[in-house]
Length: 339
Image (cartoon, rainbow, N blue to C red):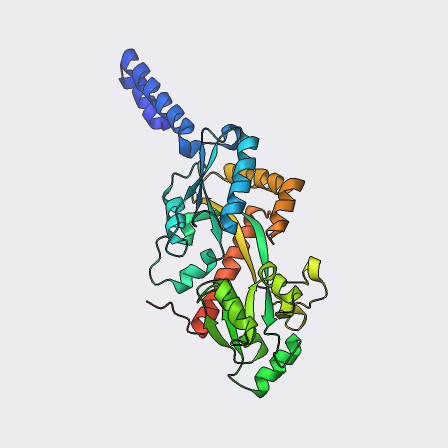
């Protein structure tokens, strides 16, 4: 209520009318402060929390979401219910998160498709501006492996071979427009070579063809490739993290030859835009505490993932940077999804 309105009521209204109007104003203000949108970290959460997962049950994203949701339920003394909304390259689930009331009672899980979709999908179901970053929970290191009879054994040898034999080096990925595909396109541009992409519907058939020599290279999560590498069915050339992978330091990182090269898949947490900043900060702190638990850390590492638990600003920077990076690669390589 403005000063002018207050004075007008004071001088012109009857005492009874003034008291009634003032009471209504104070009640409205109190209701607004107590509304879900006005929730603060002090009283969060005020009931069950929904965690939207844009995948069907059973995959690594689901497993991680269930680990985190269970531990957050114990921390908050409130249910955290995993809500599966798969489809449209994660867009159905992310759109549902964006439409939710921004009170922290609905959280969303995302993966690297979140930074690829804006440049790859012809029709988006949301804008990334409709959501706010909370934390990057984990990263997933990728690696480049070769068929066992490939005429090269190292990354340098592969690049030299590709330069001598333009257009002959093929690389498999689990699908067009995924992180593995884009990693190969980025490597081709940084190395100045031509690599021919061979998309598959999932990793398993791609592995089979690389092992059999029908495709020369495979880019996939490191943990997915290592069983075949250890068994001698593939040769690992390099990893794609910013530095060498801690468990496998014998393998070089692409960044050693091409500084700044880094491609790692991620899984993170988001909320609808407008969620109070202190609620976002509390969710991040509590999620980081969950990820720091020894039992959780072991489970995550068993899945072939590395814990990050970044703060909201750091996660938003990664989202912004990767969205720009993949937009350029998708445009330059003229990558399009098949109808």
